[in-house]
Length: 321
Image (tube, rainbow, N blue to C red; front, side, top):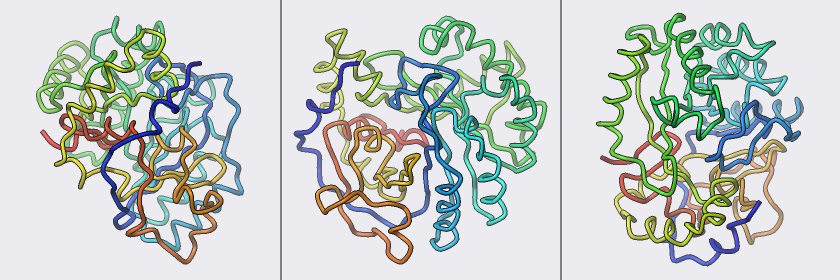
């Protein structure tokens, strides 16, 4: 796989600092039942990295001692971690919001037949990847048959109340562009998604989150192999919007890797850029028991332009319209 990091290291991205911590985004491992083209984690069925029970207990201890309001679980497929359900149930006992970044197809995998029921019982918010409402586009990006499995997964969630008004069970979908382009405006695209999915399948959901593809790992390698990397970086630079800087997710979020080490965001995690880089050894979540990071500088490189381009991008979708 071609690495883009050497091309991202030199940057003129503005200096930014951390604000009050609100969300802890935890990567439970890089193993996944899918192998999507746009995956910045380079996740797949052959990855073996997996968070241990000991580290999960450290995550819970951190939540208890800090004012964290959101636990955002990601992977790979986070549900493949054998301690996923324990972490979810313990976090919910603490009264915090738990988000599961679900690829939908995992709900149909053998051994996970009751996963959707568990998520509903725990009141977990689901953020599900569905990069298009057209079968050919989804299968081209994520693999043959993934679209139909995703539809089946959505129908299963709807039957439990997810995405249904008044149920309290939030179901948000994620759109990623097919190639070297920025996402279209989030509002109109959400309307198109809702109309198409309701008309064709009777599917309902709450919000559509548009996320810009970041030029690292598998997506970055694809750009290099197609000779599109420089053109894409130029697009990101030219589309920079200073108005998005205050809303960047890295200002209020900490990313935790499967070993418990801390990063400013999931993308920095994949590039091996830990919190406070240049100030000594990388910081573990157990090093944060009595001090915070508010006011500390965020590690930035040229890939950060992906989050500020156009309407902006974060794990919660567009930053502006």
